[in-house]
Length: 197
Image 1 (tube, rainbow, N blue to C red):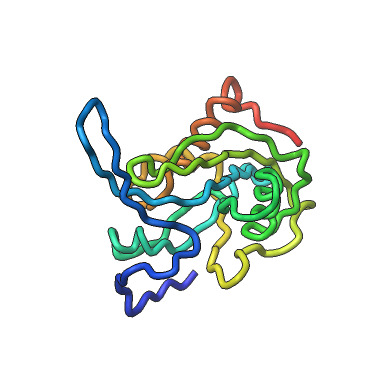
Image 2 (cartoon, rainbow, N blue to C red; image 1 turned 120 degrees about the vertical axis):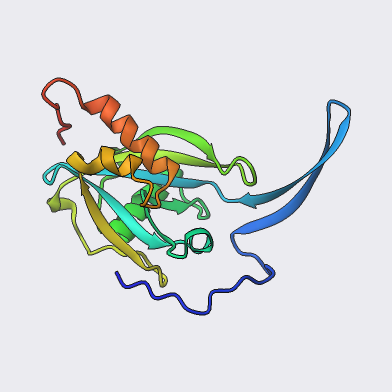
């Protein structure tokens, strides 16, 4: 995926659509404190395992906030989306898998792993982590997102997943690393028993 970024600049946030900044003021143990926070939507993320390819299906995309810190901005992430629609979290996960990665997975084949809070120092929104197994019969498009998103669908072979976790040269999310560790803990044992559909 070509990634040519030009005219990158920071400007004041006016008329926000997805986040709202606030100053939280409170008293803690009799001491008055202030803390800058961002109110943001909760989100879903899905670890997708391609059974036939023995690989994880992930997304690669440009993140402006990461660009600000590394002059590249490309990240490898789980398929994910914010919970800003009148759908259940499971339905949002289902929709994101199809839109971003191009696979139509039945709702009953998507299982919840857990949930956790992200960016706790300034946002504290919750992410619900799901898991889905796929095969090529579920592929309905090339994926890539909607509404101008520039998402590259990539596959990481199971044999390379652990190395990716520890590769500091590749920008990735904590959710991705946790999901990989969950999968390895659950499925890798004697003779590498792999999940079946």
